[in-house]
Image 1: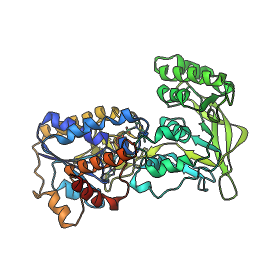
Image 2: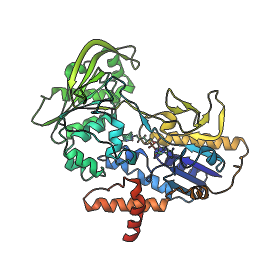
Image 3: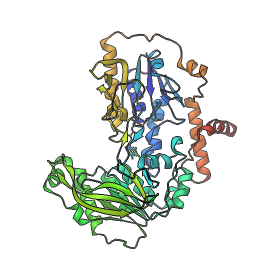
Image 4: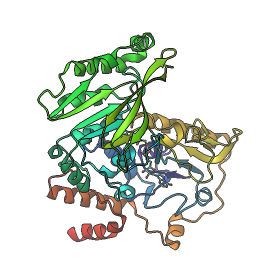
Length: 455
Ligand SMILES: Cc1cc2nc3c(=O)[nH]c(=O)nc-3n(C[C@H](O)[C@H](O)[C@H](O)COP(=O)(O)OP(=O)(O)OC[C@H]3O[C@@H](n4cnc5c(N)ncnc54)[C@H](O)[C@@H]3O)c2cc1C
């Protein structure tokens, strides 16, 4: 049996792990469009959350098992087509994540100074596709719109003393830009209240420990309506309860409190437009009231507006999946259509041998570990299908590596990735960093040669 997995982020590796557990030594080929594996663990998770990145050791163990081949720099839809995989594998598992992000969607969000948080994150994490971006951090005030952990990552990275980031794997050009940054004040704001915020307590609490930064909130914005109080009092309200307690502490702090930099958490404010003649100079927001039953409350505009003078706005309003070519896709949820991981068309008809997992399956939610259960479900479906019917032999028996070579695709294998990995760590060590990521695609071959020369 041969299985193809497209994407080598957490969900791809967890799918491989689940397959290996069912059939040790099974032949698995993983395809990854970038020169490095690990998906958002490398290009999303904040560089100062180094411990979280150690999950890559688990992925390395999966990759090291016999039967698994990794093809770096091979993009589905570009270097290889889905039909070509289906001709060579009994099953194809799509684990391509959510490659797009949502815009703020208000007038003025295309002005210079208006950014997508997802782009900023990919840029400071050294993602090759985002290397060319520039973020103007010359102003003193930035606003991050969104109440999730990604919004908090962005706020923290904007405010954290650069010396503390300089030992991480953050891209050097980003460190340089942050060193020259004038940002002193960051607002984190969203349409709904503190009880509905999606960020986790651990991430909020980090702001209390941030050197030289005061964390602030406003007592009047932390007042809860009846429905929000009931949300907090319910068993599902544990995280929110602790968030509100923490934010209340921030509300007791006097603005300034001796620090030159601050983060201020704001609630029940919906972005209306970005102002500025040319560049962004202010974000206009409308106050909101929450209406509806607990856990179903909607933010409704109050007709009261305010403008926050700022020079940069980061929209952190969500990632979204991009349709892999020719795969049934639900544009509303930006996910592949599926039942328990089995890809189905609009009428629910299964697409033989085609599966999905991770963010492209369930949308951009959950932590890294959530992808493990998700992939286990998909793989259980895959094996149930294999047991239900006789295994259909793929029509073409040739090796995909030959096809890629014939096509002149400059793909990388696992050994080459581990040389790049070593190279990055060695380059990082020179300047006291965890690693110096190789960002530019055209540098990959030279780096591989340099790694060989070193040995
Ligand atoms: C900014 C940010 C911070 C986060 N921080 C944390 C955190 O601190 N803790 C935590 O637990 N979780 C965190 N997460 C969530 C976690 O990263 C995700 O749950 C997880 O990465 C999703 O896994 P995935 O495999 O579905 O997608 P991804 O990680 O995105 O992996 C998808 C992979 O597929 C590849 N790919 C895409 N298209 C193709 C194609 N056509 N051909 C070949 N390859 C392709 C991509 O290059 C990528 O490597 C964070 C997420 C973000 C966005």
